[in-house]
Amino acid sequence: MKNLLMFVLFLVGSHWSVLGQNKTDAAGRKQGPWIKYQGDGTTPLYTGTFKDNIPVGEFRYFYPSGKVKMIVKHETKDRSYAWFYSEKEDLMSEGQYLKMKKDSVWKNYAYDGALLSTETYRSDQLHGERKVFYTQGQMETGEIKIYTVERYLNNQLDGSFEAYKMSGSLEETGLYVKNLKEGYWYRYYPERLNKDELKKYLEKCKKNGTIPEE
Image (cartoon, rainbow, N blue to C red; front, side, top):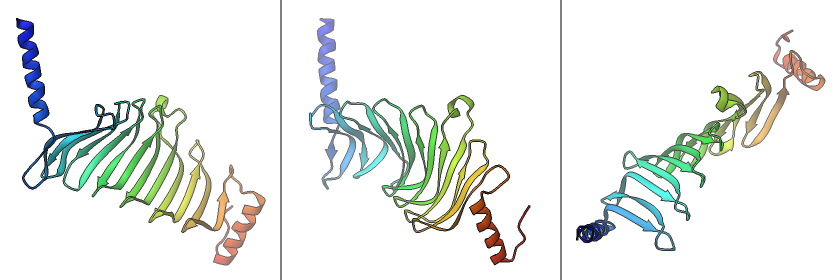
């Protein structure tokens, strides 16, 4: 008898839980908890809460397997923060959305959790610095070493470029203008330039009227 009562209470609770989801008001605006299902009708596509048709709080999006694909926390009407995951549940990237477009600095991760790169966005376009990091040994030592630094303007490479060795010493520098390399590019070796680079360096010094450094 006790088991039967528990089963009835479970069914009633489930019934009211379903009734409390996917509601719209008289104006047709989404209100309260929502679950949208994938094509199979049983696996959630996303879960979350709406207020006056606006997402609030935490939303979760799912792969067809049912594993979490993305978590979004809506901080304000226009601003939210998102985490993307692989089907193996590894964090792949995280960053901020402003009016549903990527904004500010986003972080991308390797499968072992090492920081792979950081990218600066404005209105869904790369705009600002993009840094790529060495992943070797990062998880063991906790040390993050820069591999390359690029600058973007309206989703195009535009500005100075630097590449670094794992030791931290400079390996290459140059300039991009609208996705194209501009002017002289230099590769650095321990305490010396190669013949062509030295020639270009001396020509540049002569043109600028500067004295070459020893």
